[in-house]
Image (cartoon, rainbow, N blue to C red; front, top):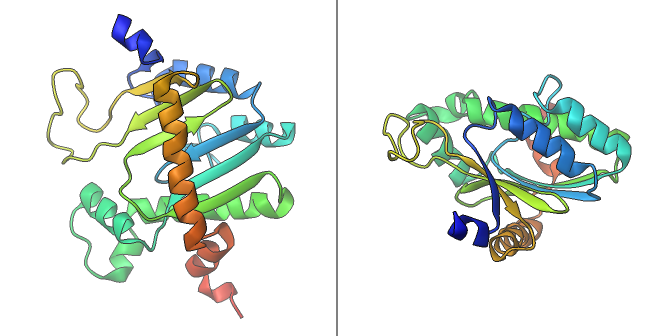
Length: 213
């Protein structure tokens, strides 16, 4: 336990979707935050009309909290590999576009695009092309982090991680060395994505070519 405290880990949550502690902690932590940094594959539980945490996000935007969001680029090789890892081999672009991963990214992109039109200063979204390793949300005081499952889903990770599909979520103090490392990890990927120029508008138009003149 001492080593956990020294690492700055405040709390373990077994599964964020099913544990009410995550919603309670997340809602509490964003209240005093001016900005959230978010890195993940899709954030489908946050940025969709009927998303589980949609109300919390909508209230944060109304409150004036800023969002910097990194999503997996749906046209990247790493997205293709992730989709195959989740569902098996996908033959042809049509099958790929119908995969759960790409459908989720598309829905989230559409929701964020509409929000940005009504609140242009509230969110900034970039799309990254690198191995998806972590789900990360940084608030003012803590960072929520969950390592993505990168092995086959039918393989048990270890006796310490009983779920075949999920790894535990950690809440890490930002003042700790671990917390500072997580922030630098986000900033490194953000700078790379910025250079690539894969913005919300660019990806939205690619996913909706019918809207382009």
